[in-house]
Image 1 (tube, one colour):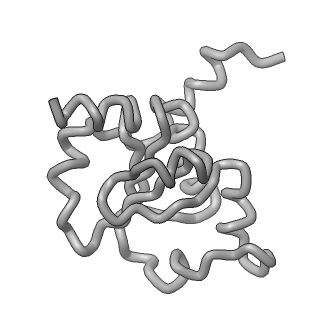
Image 2 (cartoon, rainbow, N blue to C red):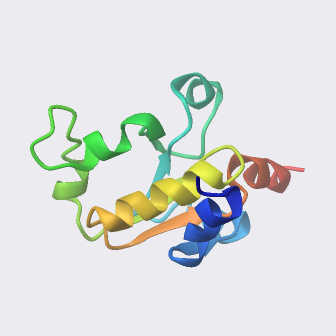
Image 3 (cartoon, one colour):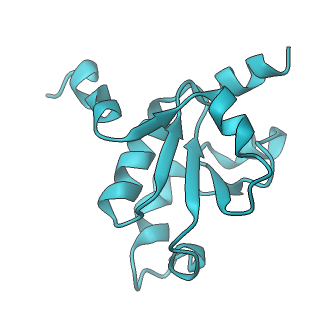
Length: 121
């Protein structure tokens, strides 16, 4: 069975940005934030105009021809996507999945919402 450190080594295969770097992108119309936390967490508050794509269904949202396919990605191939979760792990795995499924410009917020919340203090 794979160890946690091995699982999280995907962080070395994706682009990661800090919460501060993400905040600089908040009002950029070419950037779309993607919240991969569960619906309950998303409903409690998110970053800017983030769209919710639950990590559990991510591959179904991205797969062409899937009944859950989110056409947003096909219609906006040149956007930059900034992914986040609660503390960074699911965001990193989601960013890797998105990259593997053909999304070209995708980045993960290191530390997720936990780091984002620290910016408010």
